[in-house]
Amino acid sequence: MNEAEAILMGLRIWAMIGAAVAAVFLTIGMDRIDEDAQGAYVFRPLLIPGVMVIWPLVLWRWYVWETGREAWGRRYDPPRKAHFAVGMILPAGIALIILTGLALRQTWPADVAPVQLLPAQEVSQ
Amino acid sequence: MSDKNSPFFVGYLSAPRGLRTFLLVACVIFVSGLGGLGLALGVAQDDPGNGAFRFDYGRQTVTGVVEMTPYPLVRVTEGSERIAVGQTLMLSGQGKNSVISRTAPLEGQLAKVSGVILDRGDLEMMQLRGGRNGISGVEGEAPAMQTEQLGRWRLAGEICDGKCLAGAMRPGRGIAHKACANLCLLGDIPPVFVTTQPVEGHEFLLITGPDGTALPESAYHHVAQFISLEGEVERRGDLLVLRMDPDTVELIR
Image (cartoon, rainbow over all chains, first blue to last red; front, side):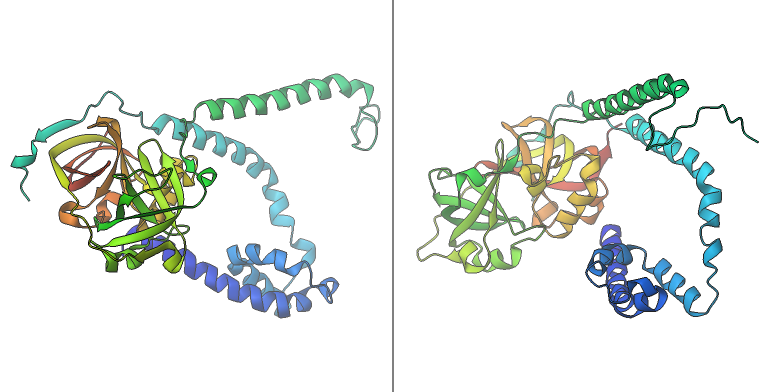
């Protein structure tokens, strides 16, 4: 198995676990953690792709809620505190990525001509 | 306490007089800046080429001799209004799937193939229909097909997957397309080498490993990079096949 196949298999395993988590969370967990969602089903399929991507976070948040350690009033403190730094880092990072990509980009070697090294009869088979 | 006389913008009210000039300037800079950035990034991109699915041709059905390089080809012996006798078509399945399992039992035999054409200059591929509608054996003896050896060459260019390059994706080459290309190659879609300058009149060559093997794993790392390599070139109908030597691959700086 080469690196590309390993990456692909890893992504497939991640997605399969995510699909299983989505199936359980959206049918059982959601009703337990959010009483406003009880009886509402149409929107739940829309959440499947997102749960498949961030299923570890979903499981962790669900575990925190089930164990009674949920402090909803403080849930958004860390994101709020990080707003300023993230707001600066994000555009700078995007600009850095674009500029690095442009700087490292290869130039199409249009001036390199094909060269016949050996004629047909001398090619070893 | 904040100054109660300072103008304060609220979205659902009209803009305060003291902020209107700032708001106008900020909007103009923001919109024109985003437009300019988008234009600059767009201009910096390479031309994606003219490859495309030729749905306008309609479904094409031709008969020919199946060859495995090991990637499947059909050498056309009975063409259609769009595909001439003597042309060589690379074959693929739907999406990123190969048709090797369907073509291998028919190697060297006459077969009828049917599907949609992908076309980019002298590069042509047929995406087969499913099952026996896509490929089936034909009664009769297959004519002998010539393979002309063209010697050993050193070429510069880029390894791509033949399907995206032929028109399934735009762009179907380049570093931004590398992950897609590698997924296609993992699915055994025929890989293609794009040369910097034409070889025997062709700028696209089907590329394989040495001695009739599939593209070596080491080549996957160089997909979408500009490289030079050596290999034996042969002509099969109107398609050139490059049997690469993996030990000769060099990155062009």
